Amino acid sequence: MTDAKFWNRVAPRYAARPIADEPAYATTLERTASYLAADASVLEAGAGTGTTARRLSPHVGRVLATDIASALLDVARSRIEADGITNITLEERGVGDLPEGPFDAAIAFNLLHLVPDPAAALAAMAARVRPGGYVITKTTALAGAWYFRPIIGVMRLFGKAPRVRFFSVAELDALHEAAGLTIVETGNYPAKPPARFIVAQKA
Image (tube, rainbow, N blue to C red; front, side, top):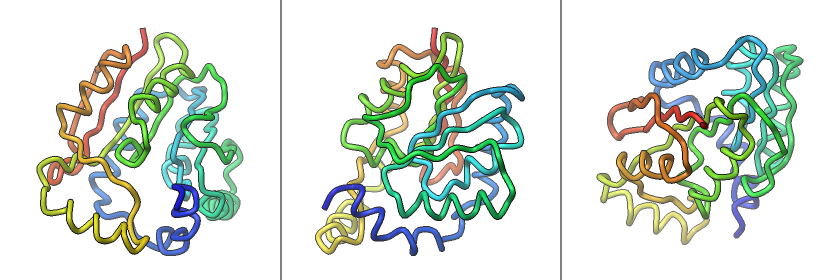
């Protein structure tokens, strides 16, 4: 099953799930917004149901939100329209087919541990950002949670879970540095298991 087919199939269930840790998510958004000017153009990879795009939209000029799953984007579209938001554009694209920039920032939350080639995904995001702009990510770091490996493995056999990479915090930091980016802020929101928040700047 391709990633797009998986996420299209689980879209209704995924869309119905509440945010697991609202305070941690709010902190992530607050820190992200602090790097974005009121007229900033933002590219989001792995936008899902559009929650992050919607919450960041009052703080920026425009958001181009992308995802591989049309069913998730349908949910995002209906919610954006219901909120009366006009500065978000949705496009069905994967990280290997991101729109050309330059953007002031490229963001990806809860994505890097799910894509086939995280290094290529980061490189693609960085390529779309102007010099001095930011690549901002948040990724669950499950390297220490060994007990999840067999659970996810069984779930994948039955089509109940996507492919998941078990990154450590150090590996995620190194991944951004290997993309030629300079890390300017990090944090774990939540702290356990850590969801690594990284703000990296393009030279």
